Length: 67
Image (cartoon, rainbow, N blue to C red):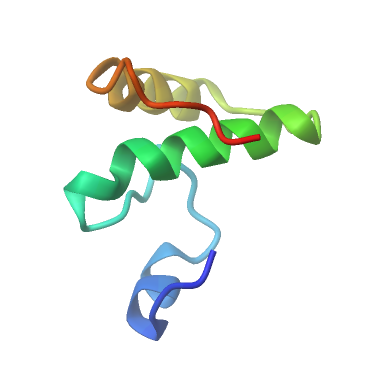
């Protein structure tokens, strides 16, 4: 996903437990995309990341999972 340089540097290799987009309106879509990618490629999720994902997505129950 293309982002500006400062946002990319701030994120680094952070996951949902350590970094979320500064634009709060985009967080649901961002986390839903992250979950879809992790599911597609059978990637692991830490306990802290799972908790953060659940917290974010609980606030937007209608957010579709990208395919």
